[in-house]
Amino acid sequence: MELIPVILSGGVGSRLWPVSREAHPKPFMELPDGQNLIQKTFLRASRLEGVVEVLTVTNRELLFKTEDEYGAVNTAKHAQGFILEPFGRNTAAAVAAAALQLESTHGPDAQMLVLAADHLIQDEEAFAAAVSSAMTLAADGWLVTFGIQPTYPETGFGYIEAQKDAPLKGGLKVARFVEKPNLDTAQAYVSAGNYYWNSGMFCFRVGTVLEELRQHAPDVVEAVSKTIEASRLTSSTKYRCLALDADAFAEVPDISIDYALMERSSKVATVPCDIGWSDIGSWNAVSELTEPDENGNRFEGEVLSHDSRNNYVNSESRLTALVGVEDLLVIDTPDAVMIAHKDHAQDVKHIVSQLKACSHTVHLLHRTVHRPWGTYTTLENGERFKIKRIVVKPKASLSLQMHHHRSEHWIVVSGMAKVINDQQELMLNTNESTFIRAGHQHRLMNPGVIDLVMIEVQSGDYLGEDDIVRFDDIYGRVDK
Image (cartoon, rainbow, N blue to C red; front, side, top):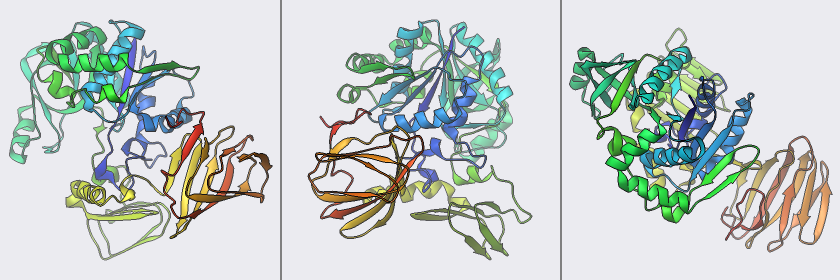
């Protein structure tokens, strides 16, 4: 039986700011073991029996970043597909698009396993067993969700109530879904024994989920079908990619798969499981991944502590010192520091809302920004100048472009650069440079086999990233 894991990678993770940002969201956060959540999800999915392809639904701006993260761990070269959203439209749209695409490529009898890119599952053997049970139920026409055995009365999750008198082969029939409860209600759910945390993971036969969507959410299926008809499908030796049309996708209802289908269908089952699941929904959850010291402190990075207890510090590049404090979260990044009491971990999202309201870019970008060709890091930003460190991957190339308001001076630090500067084509070695005037077309390429590292000094009246006109680009980013 063909199984296609569908990884949904659309959340921002505002509760995990300042590490999680819109251009570097929660799935790309590196965990203490060196891997990030999206890599772990890809590996966990690709190791399952019967997998013929891993399909990822994500924002189009994150394609190349996702490709890089998968490439670092995909040693078995599993087949990949991508569906690229121009903007988020909730999970019903993502699931419908994936199901329609898989129907055309793998047929209605294939099964899709819907996974969130930003969840952590620590018991892969138990996870594989739960998926096997879910596939058995899905083959019989059930829409299957994974119910996590609750270990405490959590008020931050939705719950699934299973029918005690309706056992199925490998699972239970679902009586209803319930919203996030208060503490007393959550305690009652845990005591009852037939309530489970709603993990947001699903398993369907492709034909079944489309039949049920057409019955319970026909407007979603119709709008997504029209979007796919207007969209562009491309294939390469690396992956198949469906880039959804923005105008058509804007007409798709913004609704979750739970509301659109799972709460309405009578064909819903759950597989109760204990798989070491966490949605990593706050810095408190992240801190649990690090072993505590004798004072209950958990530290990532260089930290000194005196008379301090039960704190979590994540510091990327600086020494952090704690003196006489308790129960704090300290998250230090090169351009932002967040300090919160552990009891208020869920409130970090309110800071992100304030940053958006005042148009502060620190909610959107890190100082180091990833691009298809490599990265750039802003080292200093003055009134009429900006200094960047640019790293270009081997054989990669920036677009042929022009700036209206700024000039640029490029100095090669290591590697070799091939440069188009107006009418000139240059080869620059270490410690060589070139000056590019405003209005001149230019391009930077790395013809070598090691990273090209450069320092770029910009000067001009306006230094915004939107002052760029692209004429040619190997990554399809040419302005229309």
